[in-house]
Image 1 (cartoon, rainbow over the protein chains, first blue to last red):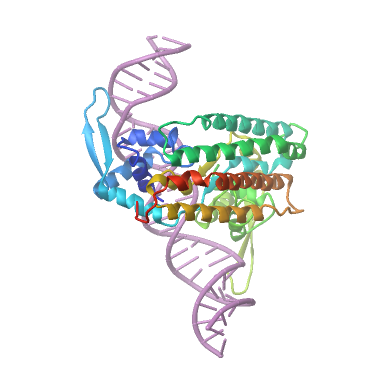
Image 2: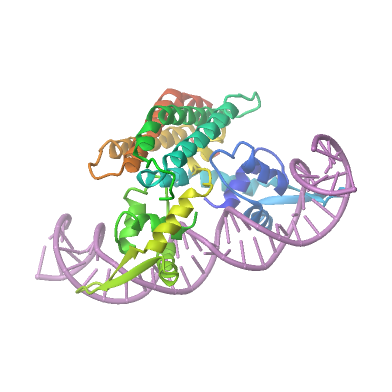
Length: 177
Length: 177
DNA sequence: GGATCGATATATCGGCGCTATATATGAGGA
DNA sequence: TCCTCATATATAGCGCCGATATATCGATCC
């Protein structure tokens, strides 16, 4: 599923600028399970406009560049529907933490402990974020939020119960590797 | 963390060919939380050889191309240690399933149900995979395996308990979007 | 017995998308 | 006063995935 499709999805929630779409990936409803950045969003919106899947109207502003507000066309809406009907790619997960942990037996104990502490703090923050329901959310958004909450909660519980497995394996001294 | 670093990590478990390293990402110990493919592994090994971080010896074979077996040098081992001491990037997670589910209220119920069924089946397979401990695993590998198991188990439980949230929201008719 | 398929093994090309950067300004905190 | 953050668009560079090319052996299938 290409960035163009993700942008169509973003616009299905209402008209938006490239800047606003980017925020949906950074902080918004997509942030926990999708990724996209300016470098791909702006070119995608241009391509979508060329193909007639979205339209663009410009709004003058003072001090800032003019706002380019994009809207889904009927053709774009159909294209999104098609994409959601295709075979989906399986989830992708990338964790430098787990990669690093594979070498716990070669790392100083302090390092491993700090790694786990940092991770626990980050995950507790995420669980906090995902605890707040929003009245305006679609059923899907609510489901995704609860899903994230459940997974992060399980992750935290696992880490707290099993951190000793890697901490005990780590080396006592402070030396590097 | 670049592919070169991941290759150093792979070679820290023993000498290997590019083909074997690829398998570590495809089926092996890295497969659940890392990604890399031929298109990046072979160039990475060339670069690592040029920089003296790995060495390469060639083994003749009949019928197949000669095996190029790579080994970590002392310099490579130090470089890996350094990388594991740096600030790690946070986990990245990409899910077309959750993206699609955001639009559950626009999709036919059959589609949503089939999506959940497919996902459950895939996840049960993963849990199965991750149930088998291996005597030869490092403590880190064992930890990562259990971690995956815990997270997938939580995921399955959540899906089974909450699938109705999106299935009830989906539209009754069979029409597309 | 012939055909097809998957595993073994290396390598490159095209294109997609992230990271960083450029540009410009107003608001708010230090 | 200065710096950082938010608003807003856009591109260049580069890293990496996916597809493809090449070659052979063993296994399965019909």
